[in-house]
Image 1 (cartoon, rainbow over the protein chains, first blue to last red):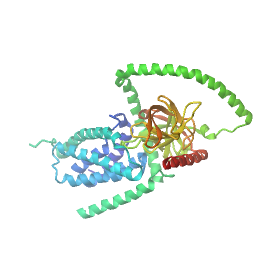
Image 2: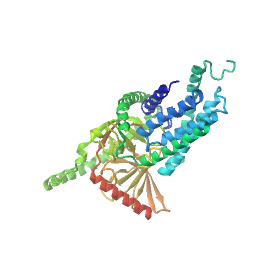
Image 3: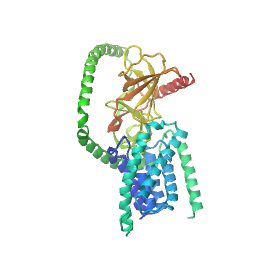
Image 4: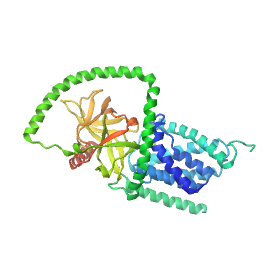
Length: 165
Length: 292
């Protein structure tokens, strides 16, 4: 996969998430395409590609919709870094791996963001965010599963979970 | 790249980003040339897609909400009755206002010019991360927008301009958890003032400066003119009044008049020196309140 394609994918995902996909909100939460795609790219392409992707997407998110430059890039970099360490001990050819990584990454995203807001702004009452976070975890996992299965077949030439291939 | 070098690179990148966060925190007076130009390129694409999304949303909403129409009808009937009463009392007030206007022209009083320079814009992008209540609009410095300008729509107060690009601006809504608005009651007598703060779930929580204030559920509140916002913009309706006996304070919970999930068009009132002075007054009030 070319780096140019990763950059374009990052820009496209950001534009779609901030505009058209806003209508697909459940419990006021929407799926985080950056987490989903960074995990898929990291697991199936390479760690470097995932870093490029999160740099593009995170930067755009910080510039156009963030309170401060760097908060989203910082959070996504940590997610890719941790997930890349975990992928070495996980089997990439089953359904559980993407779900596990995406759940962990989504929780980590909110945890790191909570810490950032705690140090830079004010304590956010977490009880108000529980429903949003849980909804986002479910949405991210479901979408990640489809994207991961699709990308897996495209890259490897056989279906995800097909142990006879 | 070996693992040690990779870790070091990530650490340096992380450290640089933290420095960037500190430097850019609180919004910048001027954003960089690259950010401004990047916005000018992406804004038209986002605008088209957002408008398409709004179109789909508007078409599908009646189908999704078909089960809620009975409740909505009842609520509207009640509101209609209440508004009829209001019309009567407002007609009386309007007569008084006409007299005051005549008096004002006789005294040659000069109006503040900011309200005559209102700029209208479209919402082109909304927050993704579920933490902030921010969005971008398609008007910027080229249209006369400055940082801290007030953003409103047909229903009331929306928020304020956080950062400005050439052809786009970033807006922070009043329901954002770090937003602060000076308010007063929308009534003729016993006018109480206070400050409101946003929460993450589209409601506002406020504190009244007078602990003995008598406020009631269903009352409307407007901006007081203290702080960054001009006086008299509708904020919302009180739905709960709480007595905080520990801090000897009266708190209120407010439902904003603006539906933040469905914003597509906004108006921007440019920030003036007069408002800047009011902002420092509100800051002093807040400090006193915290000390007490």
